[in-house]
Structure formats: structure tokens, C-alpha cells
Length: 125
Image (cartoon, rainbow, N blue to C red; front, side, top):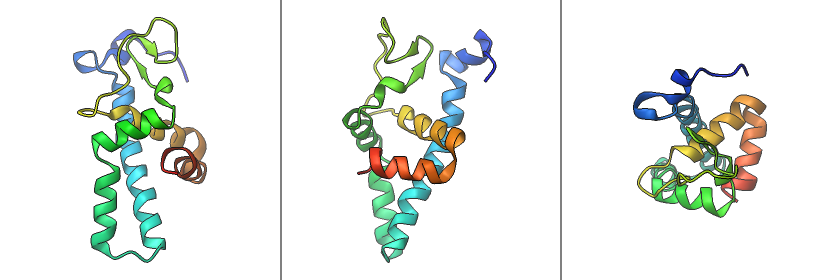
């Protein structure tokens, strides 16, 4: 991927627009994975909707991000969380685009099959 300009990576109010775009994709991919899993188990529509809503809440996603140890892979205006000197918190239960952005990045780089296997193995065991 070519380097991004400072303006492109800063985004609105210094938010990272690349993360925001990946988070939108990751949100849709997470919904698909959760709903398809519920469908394959023969769950009724109401149960599928409840499970999707539960797994996609900010509080639950924050916990998953921390519990599965992938918060170090989030990227913001300072760099990657796992890099020395990064001080911004990975997420908070109030706002959590990072898990969705990471899922979006896995999907874009590896495709749906690999992303689904990774989400089921790492994120939603």
C-alpha cells in the first residue's frame, strides 16, 4: 500500500479516515459472520437478531478486543498501539471502531473465508 499523506491519514478531527472506512467494512463482515453462524445453527430470526446486537455492542467489542489480545494492532495518528511510545488508549466501552477496523483489514487482505475462520478462532471463540 502506498504511503498516505498526512492530510489523508489525519481525517476529520484528526480521526483516521482509513480506520473509519475499514471499520464500516469490518462491521458488515462481523454482522455477516455472526448472522450466518446463527442461521446455520437453525436459530429463529429473533434469536439471530439478539445475538448480532449483543456481539456488536461497543462494550462487548471492547472486551473482545482486549481479551483476544489484538488491541496492539490498532492504528491511529500516533502509529500502532504495539509500538513504543504510543499513549492513546486502544478503545473504550463507549466507542470501539478498532475491532471493526482490524476485522475489515483482515477481510480486505485475506478474503472472507480466512477472515471468518480468524474471527471464529480468535475474536468469537
